Image (cartoon, rainbow, N blue to C red):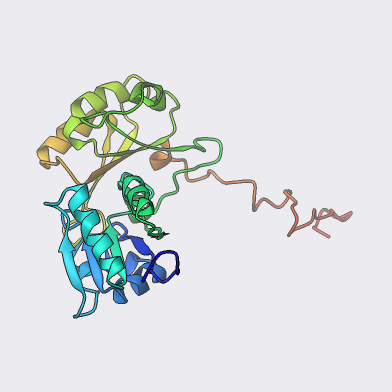
Length: 268
């Protein structure tokens, strides 16, 4: 088989979601169930999800592999005619390294497909039954991380993103929570709610809501150094009376024209 003949199946990069099996998309589930070679991020993805692959599927864990090693497995699988699924935690569009994998597969003439997944910040907000965009309070969500070894561009430093006062979702930051909290306190009031979310939707999930000024102390108390997402947002303490204009009686739009008032004050 050759790429020129168009016979190679694409590698499917599948988002495993936040952890719970029933938070997989249908497309993700179907991809895993049809996999013949499953290359999965075992340090971050629930074994239950890898277990959804058929019995004949070969499973390869990536926690001890280099980029070159896992790419070799993918290329070999594709060239031998297998359905190759690369299973990533959360949503592959966030902090997943798919860019470097897809680019190198393209160099080998191999196409790819990306299947999105539920990210930790979404699962956390859902578990809290909250909306992160409240009219008149906050309308922007920022997904970012502390610098760490990978670093972030200076234009995206925490000082700059926090200055927005938006709903701030912090990934990969638990090891630096002390300095993160110190920076956030320069831009948010000390009582701003912070959701500390560890392995949200897993059986051992920990989800704690604390004031910003306690963010570091509680993280240390829970011994959190990885697999943790922080949501910092005034939306987590929004006034119950807050509402959008979309469903207001005097707000007209394409699907609900303006309502005329009759002489007695009732709606026409």
